Length: 170
Image (tube, rainbow, N blue to C red; front, side, top):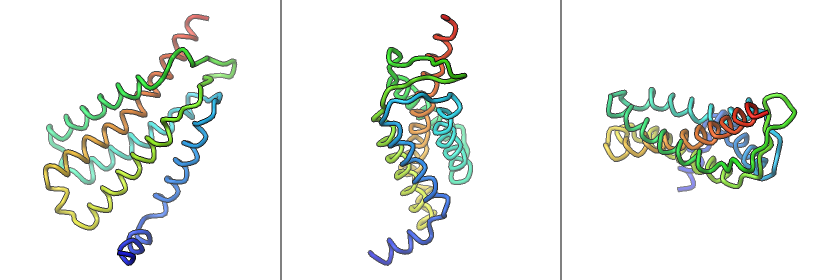
């Protein structure tokens, strides 16, 4: 068991460790109220969306069913993420393209669960590529990837909505 964990750790690419630390820091910072630019708010949704599209193209057969499953996960996650933002607590600031958002305690656990899920799925795929062909594994990997990406995209879209509605009211 120890040998397996050691092998897994040394074969994990450096970018995965860098991304993990980046997500951890961003998640910890999100637990404090902050004024944040829309560009910075777009980073996490972009990371998870691009990472999942990459996984979808590289690890799965792109069929209509696969794409529909991923889109379903993305839409469900988007709705969840959208609902996690309370527009009454969002303020547009005087800084260009920035909002003041409250502390968000959902970001850290969501990012860590998403990262760990993707990591475990990637390790499983590396150890047993045939596992990718199993329908239950494929459905879980496809839908969960879309779901997690969707949560962050949904939150970002709600932040954008709050920003543009407030800007238009001024």
